[in-house]
Image (tube, rainbow, N blue to C red; front, side, top):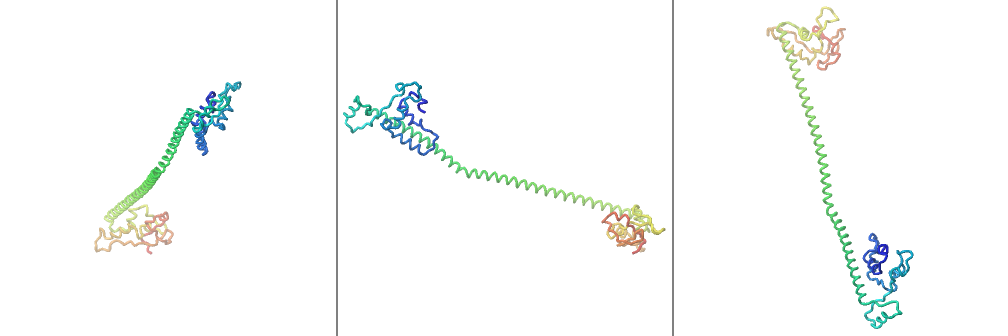
Length: 319
């Protein structure tokens, strides 16, 4: 990776590239990576047995032209024994100046340079650790924030659910109110219908009473049948059983609940001498005689029905 970006680079640049995170995979989550990187901080890259130095020297022409020679390649890196401050200066100077030696001892300046490089690397590592610490701290704060905000979110959800329940209760209450109002309206309409019916019945009864009084004033000795025949001629029919009898009257005018019969009986002495016998009292009849002479149960005037049309009675019949 270093050679791809810098094919003419030096070994020192390669070491710096390696140590400042350029040669590691930042996405690698293996726990051994951190340990390996810490080991690099204490690595002697110029040691005779350094695998990094050997890797460099084995690939001096890697990434260069196919025709490049070793002379044109990158510089060979010789091994440098560690500087020993307790060793004889003569030995180290002789080692440094010996023409037959392929290595030389590290000088104080080189040690200083490596120490400076190590300091840069440690600062870089500290910066990386601070960045990671910030990332972990951010994750922790986010987790704490989520934990702290969870009750608020739960409360918000509860408030929304409560609002929905209130809306449903309001809708249900509104439906009940509408049903109650419809019921009240129906009851009111029914009361109005009953009132109209009662007024109509009272008006009809009053009109019937007025007709009776007017009829009796002109016919004080008339009979009940004659009055009904004058009031309701459609309910008076000529008899078919015997000739000479008066017309037959619909039997419904003789039932117990008949208002016509009650009005007649309440006015038996109207327009007559109070001491006179008065007009004949009309009793309620449980049976009636049909045109063929048979007696049948009298129907209630209030019950109605098609069979009433054929049921007739004669005021002169007795039961």
